[in-house]
Length: 236
Image (tube, rainbow, N blue to C red):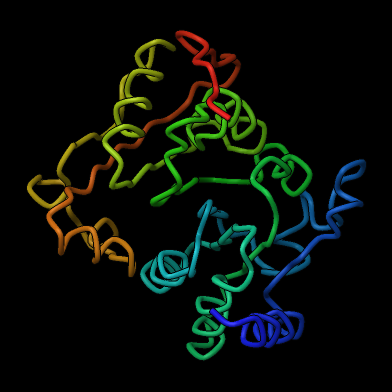
């Protein structure tokens, strides 16, 4: 994407009423003004809030919002130029249950209060083959999610990465938890439904070249501090 086009998209999003871009310097030391008040200040209802982490173009966020009008959805990503597509489409579709948040996943604790989030979707994240601590299903991230998830809140992982899928399964086992649902080949399983069949641009590309899509979901236990089975060295 050209530099000029990126600048145009960033300018666009500053005018979008449903896109939030916290000041990166301020959230280093203080909570975002929306924390604990997303339903009150933006959605103006009490519907459950669902996050999509690493939402990319926002395709899954928009499709989820269309299929589940009884929930509110927030797509989270740091790359604003990609997010523009979903933000623009949701405006054109006049969806009132969608928002987008541009921030790093590490700072979600500044964005959302305890028990503010009902569910989390992690769709096709970077598997971070060389940096396990950066995987969005690592113990440090799950411990962070627990601070905002309601008791019984579910986490979904949909990915093309066998490494990330198996790593997450191992982490669940190490922490004494079994997945709620799990498959190493989603489209050859009996799990596919209206929601799981949503396909992003990248997912369609993986399927075209024969890469199976994996899926698992689980409900982390509140009060349990997640740990890693072993500390893997990070490769710089």
